[in-house]
Length: 293
Image 1 (spheres, rainbow, N blue to C red):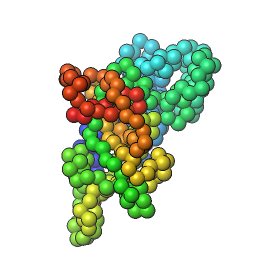
Image 2 (cartoon, one colour):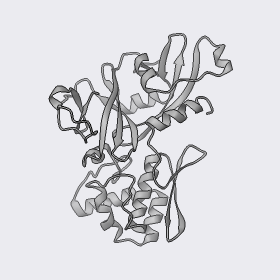
Image 3 (spheres, rainbow, N blue to C red):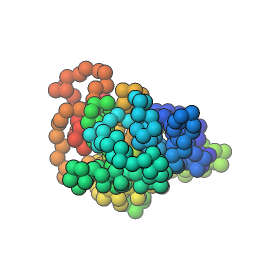
Image 4 (cartoon, one colour):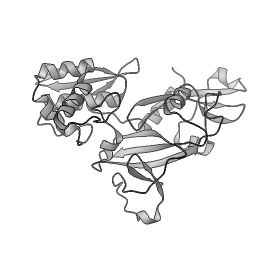
């Protein structure tokens, strides 16, 4: 786990979700959430991703800090219903649901009962954050970093994805080498990279350099991604940088199947640079137009 630690520090500053209010890293790689109310620290639990912990803080803040305008994520057409949901519950009930992980599903049940919806969005079972809701109010804008059409070997038995060198050098951290690795002619160092998909599920990949083929590759974690996403030859994967107006940022890995139609639509927020959309080409990503820089 120590391999690539220094490189990952600088990488995290650029590509991982920035530090959120009420979120603290744990030694086991998970993320804790906490909130202060009435001069007391209230522990909200431990979560697998930083985004989940940040969402837990936002939900708790509705009940405990109603006058606090600072949120980790902007209000969406889904989360705007949370105050009404929580008004039916005691403070202890809300906190207990956040801690035991049942809050998203119970909030989803509430939305269905109120609106008759069968799909209220979000990863892992409704009521959660997804990129469509994030971009819906224009608080986030996105930039295409790069995309790649998958080759037979990328989705085959080699269980690895080759990252084109020009993109690896530009967008990913330098892969360090230990003394032992410097003696090897086959493999360089490795780091772990983290990305979110369109449902805001966290994906972790081992990223390393193969000296024998002079290739930058994703290894561990890639095969699972291929299977769960149903990837095939000639499908395309793309990496996007999402940034908010208040400085939060994260990287999204997304998939475009070869037979999917692409359309041009309105972008998901302004980056502060006014440009003529007729002069820029992009692709449609889950309901928003992503323009190439």
